Length: 136
Image 1 (tube, rainbow, N blue to C red):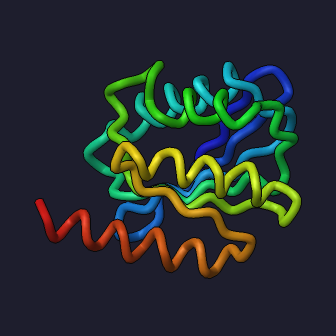
Image 2 (cartoon, helix red, strand yellow):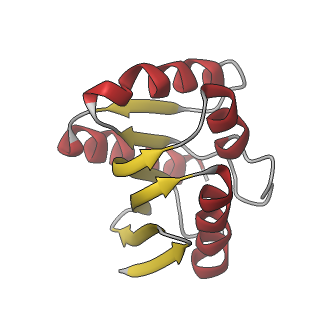
Image 3 (cartoon, rainbow, N blue to C red):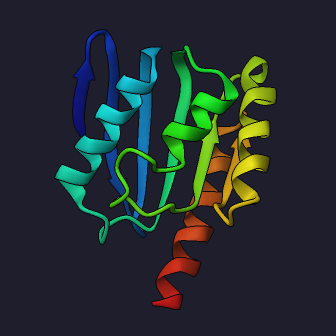
């Protein structure tokens, strides 16, 4: 497991079997903090080791609107990270924000899904990682 911080936001990165990168975020989460995490992921793992993401936002204070979240996670700032499938683990109160994000990303063919259950999210990410690996 690798840890990175930006100001008081933090991320623990854990590459699981099958190419799922499990990212646990904590602290105040801004666009700059998310971009820092994306840059760290790219520097540490490149894009070839990762087939899907599972990102846990439950310990983070998300300080982003829906459109700001879309812009950061859509890959505008670090275009070398492919738009891989991502399971987003959130608190129930965060579900409307992340469900809206998932629907907007689907319009561009980017696969995202929001979950309140960690095990279900990890299963989803593992299935999508396996599908991605069988296509290559």
